[in-house]
Amino acid sequence: MSSFPSHFDGKRFYNPGAPQARGFLDLLRWKFTSRPKPSPRFVADVKQTKPPARVEGSALRVTMVNHSTVLLQGGVNILTDPIWSERASPFGWIGPRRRRDPGVRWEDLPPIDIVLLSHNHYDHLDLPTLRRLRKRDASEYVVPLRLAQLLRAEKIGPVHELDWGESVEIGETSIHCVPAMHFSARTMFDRNRALWCGYVVVSSGRTAYFAADTGFGEHFAAIRERFGAPRLALLPIGAYEPRWFMGPAHMGPEEAVRAHRILGAHTSIAIHHGTFQLADEAIDTPSSRLAKCGADDSFLVLANGQHVTLE
Image (cartoon, rainbow, N blue to C red; front, side, top):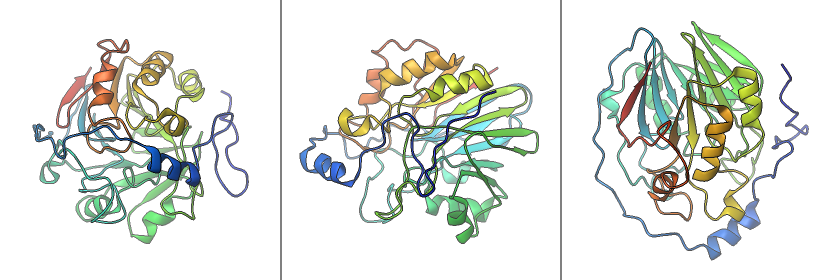
C-alpha cells in the first residue's frame, strides 16, 4: 500500500497537491460582501430518539444526532465530533447558534466507548460537550496530530493521537486516520498548527468511513484503494457557499455524490448540514439540493433523530 503524501512543512500542516483554505483577508472579504440566504431562527421539527444501550451481532445502527455528530453502534458505541451546545463558538453569547435540537437528548445517550475528533474547529471540537462526556463515560478519544494537548489540559482522555496513515486498536476496533482537505484554527494565531483528518473504522468485519470536514480531492480514491469500498460513508454536504471561499475546505452536494461514487460506498449518509448555518446557503438547501443532483437511494439524508440499521 502506498503511503499518504507529505502534509507538514516543519511548522504548519497543509493540503498536499490541492488548494489551501482561504486566509483571514479572504474571510473579511466574504463577511463584508456575503448575502446569506434567510433561514428560520429555529426549526422545531426534530423527533428525538432513544438509542439502545448496545447493538450486538452483525448489524450497524447509525443515528443522526446533529451536524457532524453521528452515533455508530455495532458491538461498540462510537460518537463522531460531538456537539450538544447551543452555539458552535468559544463564547456562549455570540457565534453560530443551533437552528434545530439534537436528535438524541443528552440523558438518552448510551455509554460511549470511542469518540472520534476530526479537527479543532468549534463545530467539531466542542469542549463543553467533551467535558460532559468526561464526567459520564470512560470513553477513549482519537484525534489528529497536535490535538491531544488540548484534551489533556482539560483532563479528557485517554487520547490517541494519529497522523494520516496511522492507526490504533481499541478493543476489537481498528481506527485509521486518513486525509481530508481542510484546515485548522481555534484562534487567529494557531492556524494549521494542528492536523485535520477523516477516519476509517473497521469493526466486526465492517468498514465505516467518517469524512468529517473536507473539500473534494484525490484522497477519496486513495482511501478506496487502501481500504476497499466502505459499508458506510459519512459525507459532508453543507457550508459550501460561496464556492470561491468555501470550495477548498467544504464539498457541496454535487461533489459529495462524486465522492460517494468514487468510494463505492454501499450506503452514504449526509452530515454537516441542517443544524448550524455556517455559510451563505440556507439551512435546508444542502439536503434539498442533494436530492436533485443525481443521488440515488444509496445516499441518505437523515433528519436529526432518525436512524438506519445496516446489515
